[in-house]
Length: 102
Image (cartoon, rainbow, N blue to C red):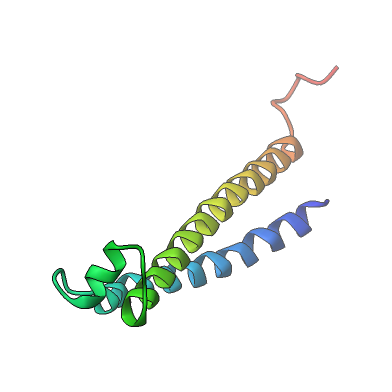
């Protein structure tokens, strides 16, 4: 993979990271609306291991949020790797101090 391809991957990952952050923010805002009230029938069903209606949607949203957060962590790790490769490439391309070449 050449430096241009690595830079394109890095730029594309910035857009992916932005989209993931937006989705995570949306779910964070939406989760309280879906959470069953503490003493509601839905909350009692959820605590008994049965879910329906809002409790089911809350569970699905929570699982989606966890997956998105893991995807974001993975993407950040990949971006760091690509960033290090780009940095190494640029460092290798710089000429050394005068008089150090054999």
